[in-house]
Structure formats: C-alpha cells, structure tokens
Amino acid sequence: MSAGLKELTSFVGIALLILAIVFIQIARNKLSGWFARIISLLAYLCLVVGGLIVVYIVFSGPTQ
Image (tube, rainbow, N blue to C red; front, side, top):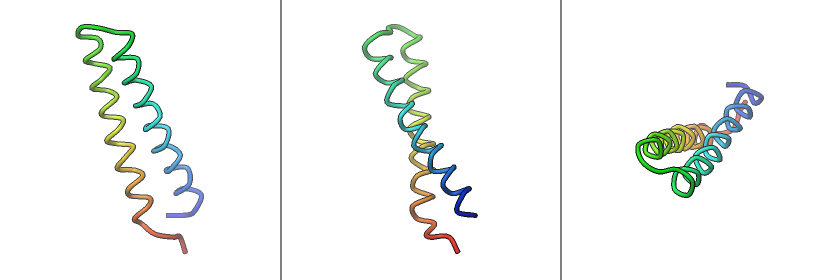
C-alpha cells in the first residue's frame, strides 16, 4: 500500500472514531427509545471499524 493511500485510510479511521464519539453523545443526551438504540448501534459499529482500521495501519509498518 502506498504512503498516500495509508494516510487517507488512517484519516478515514480517525474520522470514524470521532463520528462514534458524536453519535454516542447524541444518543445518550438528546435521544431516547428505539431511535437512541439504533444510533448507539451505529456508533459502536463506527467505533469497531475505525479501531480496526487504525490497528491495521499501525501494525502494517512503514511503507517502502
């Protein structure tokens, strides 16, 4: 994977982690009921995917 592609992929992972934070805060403080549960599920999904992306980028090592 090229350095530019790794950089963009890591930015996507970071953006997903930030989006997860925003979704969790909205679901806990502003929403209630089933809609809050759906937003929370989406937030945790973003958290897992973003975390996996960041872990992959970190452990894949430097580019050639």
